[in-house]
Length: 408
Image (cartoon, rainbow, N blue to C red; front, side, top):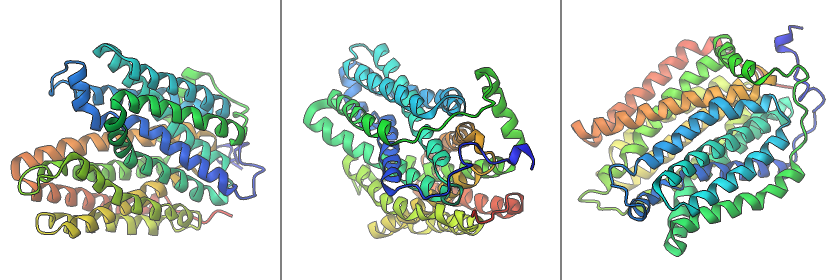
């Protein structure tokens, strides 16, 4: 057998299904971890006021968080392929709780920016590290199901982060949000330490500089990563085209929705996230390409009801559901397929894959605001539909490069 495709020592002896309680723990911990990265977004007005930062400059808080996210994908997430994962998760969790506390205690703008950068760094490292951990802990025949459950936790955590931040800040101020978040991370620390399986690192573990350099080799070598990464870039660009522009028409006349009401629309997507978790099971059964086709078709179809938003709130809700269902089903399928490419490199694979996501998200946000400024909501929907169609055409052109088979 080719060494590259030899069974990973982490997966070699596992055949039993992962306990449901452990799957739920992965999902809950992933959701709580990713939420930390998004708490600042609905709090920008309060941060600008408390730190005497202008409305134009307070966006630097989000920028600092995103810089931390990118650094985590490049520098911290790959460590899961080098170090014992459970100890690594414990260290990162405690550091994340400390970073959240530091944000809550910040008294100057530089201290705030340093704190949110650390939260972005450690929150992303925890989240994507847990996804890779779930893939490594699962038996091969159920990897898609377990990863899908963890990824659903991520998406729900992302959606609920804004709701949580708004509710807690109304009761205890923005500092209370970060102190509560630190307490939540500490609360889940003991269950994680007790329940996460101890997975020995690869016997031929390389040094850290070589580990980072190997990411370029993986990107050049693995066709599944290249294809699924590009699909992720296009899908997340379409996703962010919608969510980045949504507040612009809804906050203006004749709608005049509050930020709380606009944020609450994201809860509709939670239904899509829960449904999309099954995409991983279909990938386990060798249906990854069919699931991808259906997900991309839903992503494209969603733009029709979304374009009718000005006439019908119901159409908007249907469009959100279709968009989130299609996007999350594709995301889960992508991860299920790339994790099979190189079992001993789950940390590096998820780090590289999420860099495609980050690039797509950024391009989508820029394109959305530009389109809306020039031609309004219909231009936003036209751009989103075009990107979604491009993703579908790209899948059709490359589907034979990543054949899928059922895993026994």
